[in-house]
Image (cartoon, rainbow, N blue to C red; front, side, top):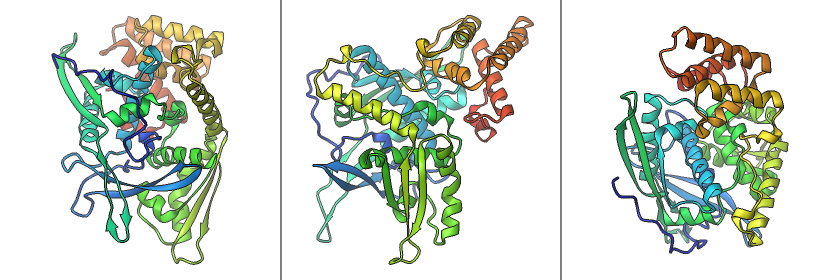
Amino acid sequence: MDQSLQKKEDRALARKGLIYSELSVSEIPMWQLPGKGKVTPDSLSKIVFRMTEMNGQMVKVPIKVSPSAEWGYPTVLDLEYFRAFERALTMAWQREGMVPDVLRISGREMIRLTGKAPNGERQKEVRDFFERMSGLQLVAHSVKNGKRGARQGVHIFERFDQEESPDDHNEPRWAHEIRLADWYWANLNNFHCHIQDQQLFLALQRDLTKLLYQHLHGLFRVGRGAASEPYSELAVNLSLKRLSSFSEVSRQLGPAHEELVALGFIGQWKIDRVSSTRGEFTVTWEAGPAWHQVYCTEQQLMQAVEQGIRREDMLLPAEPELVSSLEMSEDAMTVLKEIYDFVGNHDHAFEPFWKKVVGSFTSPVRRRVIAEVRELAMSRQIRTTRARALVSAFQREGQRQGLAGWSKSDASRKRVR
């Protein structure tokens, strides 16, 4: 990667490309539950469905997802990294007034944008993520009069390169340079990558909850806060085993829905039998206050875009998990300063985790954890960096208290080695 990839500054920001692509790519239900991402002779591709609005009407769009035979389907873990990737693009947009068509980002930055702490295993996860997403193809699927219609296949990334170099601790450091596909780049610069609540996403504990949360964003937007979908389609979209009895379906979907209701993303939901079809059900949802708050912010920003207001003049909303200093209490700001003073680095990529700490723990708990790690550092009992030691300490404290977003179910991926 000695030479940077060429920019596309002369290319028009046309609204064209993937299947009327006024949507967030992450809302295409291509993500799989853990253990279901492998490609087999029976799963070379799958047809998923999403709702979109065209000329004032709701339209169901079938999309064929064709993964790389070597790397397989993207999983829930890849969804987490994809959201981090789009966060990095959004941050560049806010700095420069335009989404770059080429993004150069280190593995550590990607990991920290997910709210986790970097280590060797997660560095590999990032590399695998880019390989898997580069090999994925999305195809507009249509059938007319029993015959297969014209298809348009696209990739999300046009090209990506990886580079490895040792850092100060003689550990490998990976840098990734990704050129976005034309349609995706134009999509982002036309503000068709919608706002989502990253703080709420980081608080989700179940893998199925994350898939459902991502899927409902698109359904709620089209339905203005209300949505319904046949259970048979929902099972395909969320890579679920299709069950036949009402009680089994309720047990399958219940925990994920309860988690979203508790967080305010869903207001109400229900399952109804379809009397005309045996073993078929319809799932209906109403959005909760957490979704409506994000949707309202998005509409205000969209109006500014349509009115032609320059991006540098817009009052851009802060990312939901990055609470501004003006909105934080004086005590929280003091704790945040203590953290930065202690770790010796105001790392903006790590900032979401520290502010998650401020929002999750009471002041006495925060100060106690910082004091304990400070004492370990002074007695030279820390074998890693101060930042990693502090991250590990807060993760253990969150797991001990059973706080949302800090559960032991994610310990294998969240624990700092």
